Image 1 (cartoon, rainbow, N blue to C red):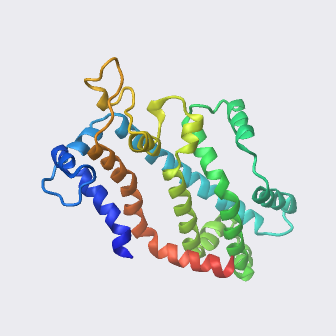
Image 2 (cartoon, one colour):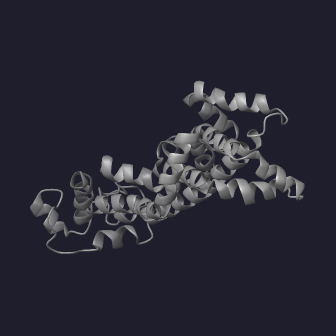
Image 3 (cartoon, rainbow, N blue to C red):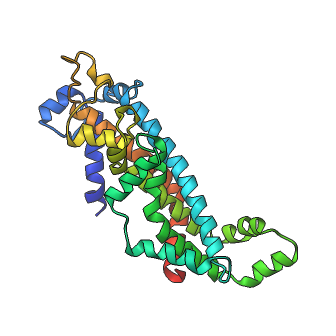
Length: 276
């Protein structure tokens, strides 16, 4: 099973490090690396479209994950106390989003009405919303499973609600919050559809949309580093090694983050499955 999973990743990495002559000799993807060449990485990291899109993806993923996780934690904590102001109405509104989706056209009209088209804010705000209701219900259930005596004793000692949230609720639910943050992070990192729908300027595209253009369509982007020497301003198609190098860049951040979250991930999934 490990060989089946790792072999495609190995082929992608080896092809990205191969010379163009070796790629031509292999007739496509390279399995045995005869010469190591970092030319594809030097080319895409030279400050062109790929470098800029990588920074865009990192920024959108970081800001979006922090913002979405913070909103879910605050909302779940507030809705975990029955009897608070508008508790039933707000909880019902959240649960209704499981049953009814706004649809693509109303969403586009809303984004256009808010003047968010062709802005980075639309990637941050729109991408995380579909996951919020599910994660909120999971985290709310976990908050409600914490013994209420802990919160009551903290209030008797004079702790504020913010202090109780950060010192008790969040500290006891680190595993669940880590899993929720991972879900948000992967969703932000891999999402390209919202960028395709709402961004008109290619210089604002995230890495996944550039990856889609390079690898699936095999086309270059106007103004990219690959446009040097182009005829009539048309960007030439990137080489196979360049395509595979972009793929490697797209998967490396997730591979680097996952080992640090894995311990919390297993713990959080088990807790969510048992108590959610």
